[in-house]
Image (cartoon, rainbow, N blue to C red; front, side, top):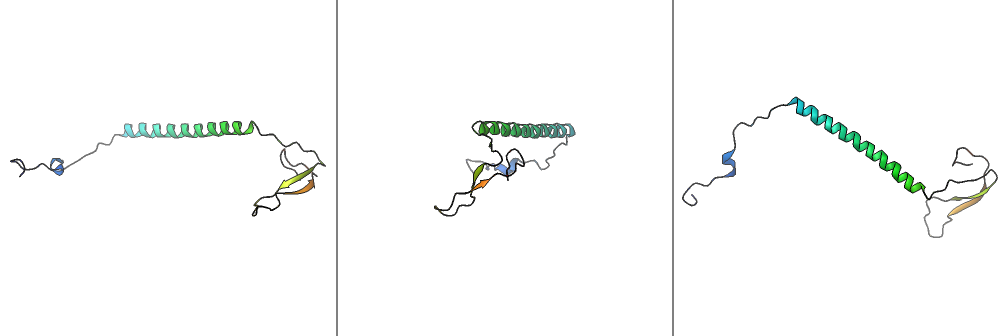
Length: 102
């Protein structure tokens, strides 16, 4: 006893049977909302990717090489401070695509 009466515990007020109603219209509306939300997120991702590309490409110039030009090729995976950073010069023989040369 506390203060002249029995204490009320949190588990004393629970109902024995808890039932949840199944509302199919609410579930359908929720599924439609989630699908629209998913589509809008995909659209926003694509729009932001295009915006990032435009911002990056502002100061980026396309290579303009001609057949017969001498170029240096950047070395990948440099391991030491004094490793060779560029190899060449190599002569351009053929243009495969707008940015790919042999």
